[in-house]
Every structure is written in C-alpha cells, then in structure tokens.
Image 1 (cartoon, rainbow, N blue to C red):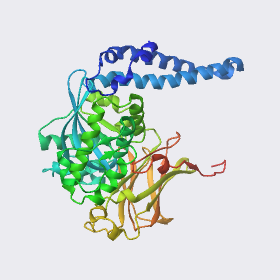
Image 2 (tube, rainbow, N blue to C red; image 1 turned 120 degrees about the vertical axis):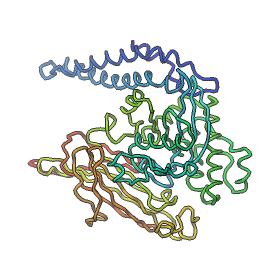
Image 3 (spheres, one colour; image 1 turned 45 degrees about the vertical axis):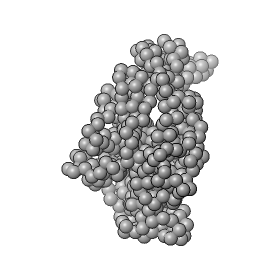
Image 4 (spheres, rainbow, N blue to C red; image 1 turned 90 degrees about the vertical axis):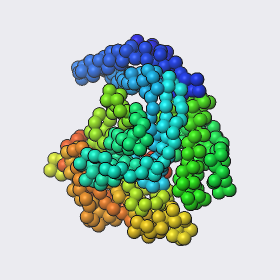
Amino acid sequence: MIGIYDSLDWNALVPTSSGSDLGPLKAASPSVTSAAYSVRTSAERLQEIDTSRLLPQVAAPLRQATEELSQATDALDSAADAASIAPSMLGADGPKSYLLVIQNNAEARALGGIPGALAVLTFDHGKLALGAQSSAGDVGVMTPTLPIDPQQQQIYSTRLGKYMQDVNLTPDFPTAAATARLMWERKTGQRVDGVISIDPIVLSYILQATGPVQIKGPQLAAVQGAGLPTELNGSNVVRTLLSDVYGKIHDPKLQDIYFASVAKEIFSVLSSGKAEAKGLLAGITRGTEEGRVLAWASDPATQSVLSKYRLSGSVSGPSVSPAQFGVYFNDGTGAKMDYYVKRTVQLIKDCPADGYGQTRVRITSTNTAPSDAATSLPSYVTGGGAFGVAPGFVQTNIVAYGPAQANVESATVDGQKTPFAPYVHANRPVGVVAQRLAPGESKTVEFTFGKIVQHAEPDLVVTPTVQSIKDVIHMTENAACDQGQ
C-alpha cells in the first residue's frame, strides 16, 4: 500500500492551463489512508515495548525502527489527508470557487496585514481561473454588522463584522475567513466554497518558481509614468507592493488598479502551468510554515481535515500545540508604517512557581523610519495624523496569547510595569498592550504567563510581517533554576 503513495503524481496538484487528471489521486485515497493507519498502528505497538529489559543489540535497532516508523506515520497521515480533500478542492467533482485575500503587511493585522486586493479563484478539474477582482474598500460597510463570537468581539471590537479591512484583527483564521465569505456574498451575491489568504512575500516565492512577469494592460494607463516597475520578480515584488507603490501613487483607487494588474499577471502565469512544479510546491510549503498561506473551507468535512494543520490558522483545536504561545500585531496608526517596523519575539521559561510553569513573552519593536519621516514619507504612508498618531510614529496593539488554562499575570515596558487589558479567547489567556514608537525609537514589552499546566516544550506563533520569520522568532531561553524548584 505504501507503494501507491510513492507512485502518485503529486505534481497534479499544481494548476495547469489544460487542467490536471485528479482521478488517480482521488482513487488512491482509500489505499493511502489504509497505509497510514497500518504504519501508525505498527509504530504504536513498537512504542509500547519496554526496551529496558532488552539486550543493547536488540534495543538500539528497535528504537531506530520506532523512530523511523513515527516519522513515516506523520508523512503518510498528511498524504492521506491531502489525497482525501485535494481532488475535491481542486474541482475534481465540479468547479470550486474561493475568495482570494491578499494581506498587505505594510499595515499589520493579527493574521498578517490589512486585506487589500481580493479576487475569486476557480478550480475546475485542476484548471485555475482568476475571476472577479475587487478590493476590501469596494466591499463597503456591513449594515447591520455581521455577528461575531462574543469573546473575540470583546477583544477586537465590532469592526470584525463591519469592515472587510478588519476581519483579520483576530488571529483565528476560521473566524476571519467565514466573516469575509459572508461579506463577499452580501456585497456581490456570489457564494464561494472557501477562502484562501496569501501575502506579497508568498507572491515572491511564486515568482521564484514562475520567473518574472510583465505588468501590462489598458488599466495601467492611469498609473504609467509613476516610475513603478513593469516587470516584477521574486526580488522586487515585496518592496514594490509594500512600499514603492505608496511613494509613487498617492490615489488609493490607482493603487488598487496596480495591485489588481499585478495579481492578474501573476495568476495568469501560474494558471498557464509554466511554473516549475517542485519550486512552486516548495514556495507554497514555505509560505504555509510561516503562516503566510491560510485556507478555510465552508464544507465541514473538508474544514475538519484542514483544522489539523497550520494551514488552517486556528488559535484552538488539533493544529495548536499544547504549550503554544501567540504574539500578534494590529496596526493602530491607520497607515502603512509597519513596513518600517522591525521586531523580535522570544520566550523565556522562568523557574516554576507553586508547582506551575511560568513563561515570559518578550517583544522588542523598533521604528526604523527616517527621522524626517513626517515630511519625507507620503501622508498616505504615515497616516498624516488622521487617527491621532503623529506622522512618522507607529502605534500598534500588541496581543499575546498563552496556553489554554494559564493566566496572563503582568506586563512591562522596558522593565517597568504597565497596565494591560486581560481577556480570554478559546480558553486561552490574552493580554493586550498599546505601543507607540517615534522614528528610531525601540521598546520592549514583556508579558508574564503563569499557572501553566502543560509540560510540553513551548511553541511560538507570530504574525507574519515583512521580515523573515527566522529573524523575528528567537530561540527560547531557559532560566537557571535550583534543582529544588
């Protein structure tokens, strides 16, 4: 049965202009699932053997076999899940449409950035088509406001259900996606089968696999002469979309035209099947691991499978490790200043107190904007003080989540205790601190979480920003504790 897994053409998951034959993958799903179950059962049986009573010559190979089987189990379980839902999601049983949301990291939201460009992606037997394009602003204001889970509404306000630009103030993607789907349906009358979210950094990964694209078309006549590149590649797309477009085009409507043209050309190349399959899948995988690629399905059975993985962007459920911490950023400037903010996040495991674990979450933020940002940057980038934040300054709501059943006990700014807003979401403690940074200024916020009952190693999830994730998340630090503690 494992041979079936090896023989499948997983490149069929890559869209082409003529579509893909998803039949073999769909037909093999039961066999791959059976293989995964068999290997998992074997691994569990081996793990139950007490190696302390065995000769070293027997125990060592047994431990090695157990470890290898466990690794194979994870891979086969993932393959079985992919084989069970991918064909249907890619239109094997009929066309499936998804609302594509491109998050703009220059204005932070908990899940990445403010929803900017929107489009409808349709898959029909593996063939990808880009349909209606729009922007979050075009969706307008929801009246009446859509209902939102009371816990999240208390933390993130009714804006979650009022503006498409704010559905991702929450770090829970299933909530944000379901809300975005309802907003799209209310605005357009079109019901989609799910929501997919990416950001410009993912677009750079895609362009590394497809090669450069030419930005052209009659729509661009309005922005010609602005000095923006007409060829985008993996190296220049992030800076172009998150910085240059705001410096060279000051009209939001014209910015939307440029964004729409970029999305159209990139997905046109992607749907043509010209992308190098291995590189494309590697880029999408990397984006998923970094929290930049998220997916939600309206079908409960499909969503149940997605919820097992980081791809789901959930703050609770099977994809969340027992000792997970989360640090999320929401812009309070009302502008595009997050392009200039550099951050590091680190967990510090303190000594246990009263038999429970304690962990500090340390977030250091620096505003790298030029000292004359108030005058050298466009008012559209700085916000021009429209929301009470002086031009050049950056205001951010820093949101920290602890593991389930723990407490958020205190917060400090540069070592001094500071007030914070405590909440609970999905049985997880939440602390919120508002921070304002002048150009060149740096501050460190620390949240202390106590009463931690989990004994697993802590895991950390952070809002994906313009920065590389490896530069943001630093290695966990362990405090030196007396053995008696």
